[in-house]
Amino acid sequence: RKEVEQDPGPFNVPEGATVAFNCTYSNSASQSFFWYRQDCRKEPKLLMSVYSSGNEDGRFTAQLNRASQYISLLIRDSKLSDSATYLCVVNRRANNNDMRFGAGTRLTVKP
Amino acid sequence: NAGVTQTPKFRILKIGQSMTLQCTQDMNHNYMYWYRQDPGMGLKLIYYSVGAGITDKGEVPNGYNVSRSTTEDFPLRLELAAPSQTSVYFCASSYSEYEKLFFGSGTQLSVL
Image (cartoon, rainbow over all chains, first blue to last red; front, side, top):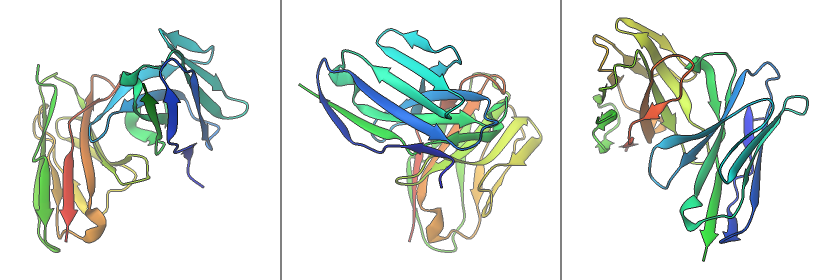
C-alpha cells in the first residue's frame, strides 16, 4: 500500500464546476500537509498548506481530517488555467526531510 | 532571481555510463534536495543537504552520490547508470527545513 494515495483521475470538468480531490495517508504520526500543483512536464509548485482547522485561498479550500487520515482540496468555479496535476504531500516529520508525495490527480477543465 | 537552475534538461545515457546532474540556486537557501519522479508514482527523495558540507540519504539513495561544497550548488552523480534510473529528476531548495520547496525545471534522463 502506498503511503500517500490519491485518485489518479483524470477528472474532466466544465468551466465553472466545483471539483474535490481526496488524499489518504497511512502514517498517523504525520505532521504537516500540503497541496502542490504540477503542470504538464513542469516542476511542482506549492498551491497551499493544509492546516488542522481547514483553510481557504480564493477559490481553493483545503481540509484535514486527522482521525480518518485524509486531506481534501476543493476547487470552486473552475478555470481553464486550473488544468494540472494536483499532488498531495505529507510530511512525516516537522521538517522537509521526510516528505511523501502522492502520485497526483489530473484535472482537465474544459470550455 | 533565477531561482533553482538544473542542467541538462534532457540526457540519454548508455548502461554503465556516468554523469552529473547540476543544480544551483541563487536564493541563499541552506536546504537542498534531489527527487526523482517516475510515471504513476510520487516524487521520491534521493538525497538532501542542510548546508554546505552536510548531506544525507533520502528514501532512494542507491546508485547516486551527492556533494555540497558551496551553499549554491548541489550536484547529483550517477555512477554506472542502469535502466532503473530512467526518470525525471528534480532539484529543490528551501530557506529552512519548514519552508516551502522551490523546484528546478527538471532533468529527463533515459538510460538505454
